Image (cartoon, rainbow, N blue to C red; front, side, top):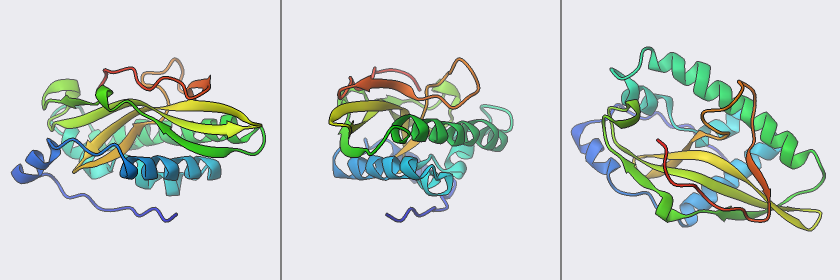
Amino acid sequence: MLAVLLAVPAPTAGAQSAQVVEPPFGASLGARMASLFHDISLDSLPRAQGLFFPESAYVAMKTHEIAYPASDYADRLIAFYRLDLAAYHASIFGHGPVAYLGINVNPGDAAWIEPGWCENSIGYWHLPGVRLVYSQDHVVRSVAVASLISWHGQWYVVHLGPNPRPLNIGTVDTPTLGRGVAGPAGGC
């Protein structure tokens, strides 16, 4: 599957109103998470970065809300994403063949985050705890994708591993036997 990086222009008043529409949970989200699982299998940041929240969108959201949003994006968000990809790769693919089964998601956990909340100047949809479900040695297992947020009607990963986390290391979010429980609701 080909991942494409797109430049995202700074938002306009019309773009802000487009943000209010809740992104879909069906085939489009499923395809994006299948791509993420494939990119985890390759431990490939360049491929997986196409599924990560765009830098220009992050900078637009955080300008006047936090100091140096571009540095925060590169030094914290992408740095953790890189570490988490490696941790997920080792956890999932370090123990033999794996078959991807799909996702476990609870659309009811999605929440609209108003501008001004969570240090954001632009509103967005937030979806916590989407679970990647797979089989290994005929045993169903799952891991969480900690946090997805929307941009122009598309879901993007913003935290693969937990946020906050106990240490600044790659961390797999709630690995579980079975499909696990999607969520919990809440967060930013």
